[in-house]
Amino acid sequence: MGAGQSSSKVETIDTTRLEKDEEEMLVKGESLVDDLTKLSLELVDEYYLEFLRPDFCNRVALVSKKLLLETTNAVEINGASHVLGLVSGETEAKEKLCEQIIKHYIDRVNLISSIIYSLEYCSDRLRALVVGPICTVNYDVFNKVECDEICGDSSCWIENNLINKDIDRNQQYFHLIRKIYDEFTKSIEKFQDALEKVKKNPKTGERKSFTDEDLKNLSKEIHEEIYKVKTNCNELYYSALLNPPKTSQEIEQNNYYLNLKDKLTQEVKDATNQSANKKFKEAEILAKQVAETSAQGPIPTNQ
Image: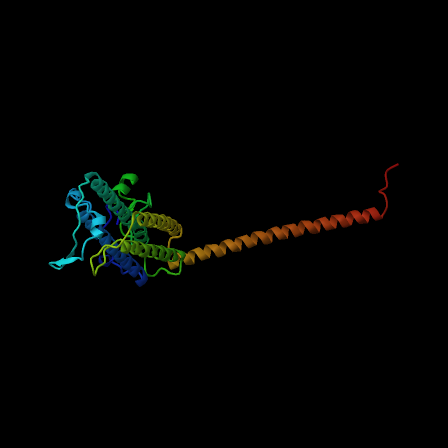
């Protein structure tokens, strides 16, 4: 979640005014975020431990692939398979290879960081619409300190924004919340699949083959997905803010004023029509009088 935001999970919040679906969306959404964040951090730790330590290049040796392929059968010692190879003395080649490996895993870490950073974008907005907090002076701010600074005091920060249970859930606001949740969870699944491609085999501990080109293509795919989900979440978030949930009383009052408006509009139309009809009849009478006068011949003039 965003910095400065309450770290309390939905289970610790008074959810007596929430429907079951809303609670489940928050709980499941945050659970998916936690699982993905955990996997991401495990991968980052693994990369730093194996490839991004300062002494990484000193701990590895450059072996002649040609001579390695010409060796006899592998020998198993202490449960591990070993082959005989020739250690190369080409320091420059070794350093270049180390740099390429380090760059590859830094690129992996950067990709994982992009995924982690993107998670709170939709998560913050979904949570804000269901339980809060909301910064009424800037709805894109989810940090109380920042909100208070923009506002000038703490009056713009609403920590608890729970939705009453008596509010009709068949409103656009709740459909938009569901859309945000659906878009968000679909993206999380794609991010999860992406990280599965770069993790070790849990059974054998072997690392899957993943080239620089593979990483480049995956990075492009993930960044496109991040852009798409953040754009969609933002549009849906503001659509929901522009269509806040109404209580039964507010809906009834709104319907009353809509009916009153329709009634007044109809009365104006009727009055306009009556006025037009009256003028039309007056014009008809005048035209008839002119026609009758013309039929009687020219109007006599005084000699």
